[in-house]
Structure formats: structure tokens, C-alpha cells
Image (cartoon, rainbow, N blue to C red; front, side):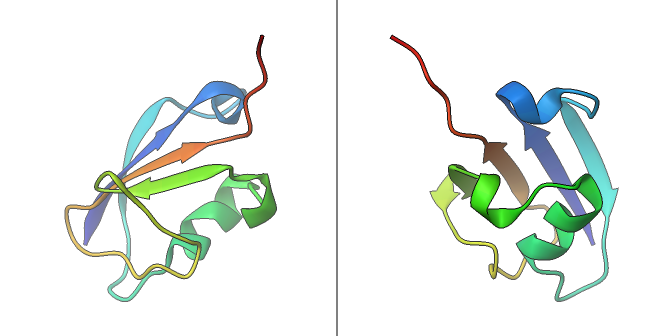
Length: 74
């Protein structure tokens, strides 16, 4: 199956902004985070197709994943 992974803010440092990935069926979101060296506790917001999910979410063909780190500001 093919999914789109979008990284935001500091997650882009040394990585990518948007990338399509070919993954096996029944892949969980955690399986996407591991090769990116992103720990689940480092993810403040994780969206799949615009809906908030956790790292155990099973992905489907065509899903779009958006990963956001904690963001500070004033």
C-alpha cells in the first residue's frame, strides 16, 4: 500500500517535508515513526486523514499522515 507522510516544524530537520512510502498491509503508525528516528513521545499531534490518532493506528492504502512536534511560541 502507498501512504503519504508529512512532517512539520523540527521533524523536517535532516528529513523531508512530504514523502510517499510503500508499506506492507497492516502497517501501524509506529512502524512509520521508527525508521524516521521519531519516538512516539516526541509527537504532539498525529493526524491520519485529518483525524487525531495514536501510534497503534493501522494504516490503509492512500492514507495521509501528518506529524507535528510540540511547538512553542509566544
